[in-house]
Amino acid sequence: MNILLLEDELELQELFVLNLQDLGHTVRATDNISNGLEIYFSDFQPEIIISDIQLKGLARGTELISLLAQKTLVTPDVIFMTGGAMITEEQSQLLGARKLFMKPFKFFEMAIEIQKVVLLKKTTEKLIRELKQLSQCQSIGIRLQKGLDFPYYKYEGFADSFIMREKSLLGTNECGKQFLECMCGNVIEGRFDPKLPFFTPWGSFICNGTTDLIATTSPEERQTNTRNYCNKAGYESVALIPIKTTKNTFGLFQLNDFSKGKFTTEMIADCEAMAAKFAFRLLQTF
Image 1 (cartoon, helix red, strand yellow):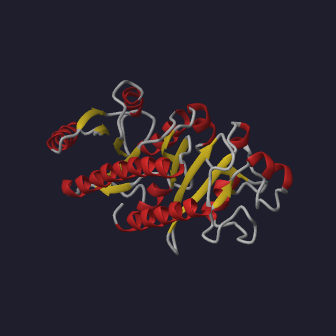
Image 2 (spheres, rainbow, N blue to C red; image 1 turned 45 degrees about the vertical axis):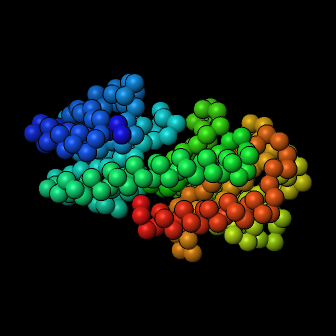
Image 3 (cartoon, rainbow, N blue to C red; image 1 turned 180 degrees about the vertical axis):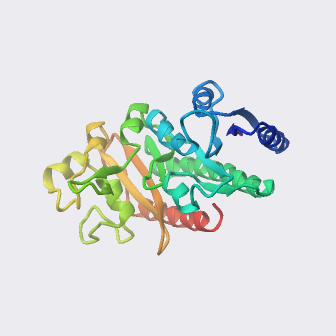
């Protein structure tokens, strides 16, 4: 796996590089955000970024995720490190980091976290294949929580322009409060009425004809003012299936197709079972 390391203490940087290489990873290292972004957008394409909070230059490591989110289709997994008490674990997670390590720490702890990322990437790739085979849909996506948002973690079949436009669900209401927009936000936050024909008791949104749905329902019935971009992009069949346990929602599966009538009750039940199983793995393993 390709790893980008940002560490401005040279001795630590060299030690981390050697340890990561011993684990079989390919590593590029630098001591500042500017060079880090240059490496990221080169042919190297790291899948994990490990960054200290305090770096050389004006930008801090905490700014890295927001800078990448503005320019990338899928923001990579980020692990923060710090030698001081400038940031808490909760604050780092709100910024979108997977984990915060307080220096000094035992390297095997970071190795375990990296292995979790490796396993998660393999698992989501397998899920994409299985969902595509089960649904025969042209476009499949998996959204997972990163900070307050739920961007795409893995996808196949969507145009890059679609992902860039739709990757963030965060909106701001008239009071300045952030919330999750559109039907994806409904599904993730559990805003649904199971009596309506396009919701399942599990909380999935299922539509075999988005043009007809928009024409025959109100925003109140759809629980939100939807962006309708799936329909504008030509998708008629859309399914949004929450990845959740009884207490936690981690994201959703998104299944889109340009043709109408792709989904059956049995197929959606199978997808919901896959989502529940994946949610349990996220809770226990990742």
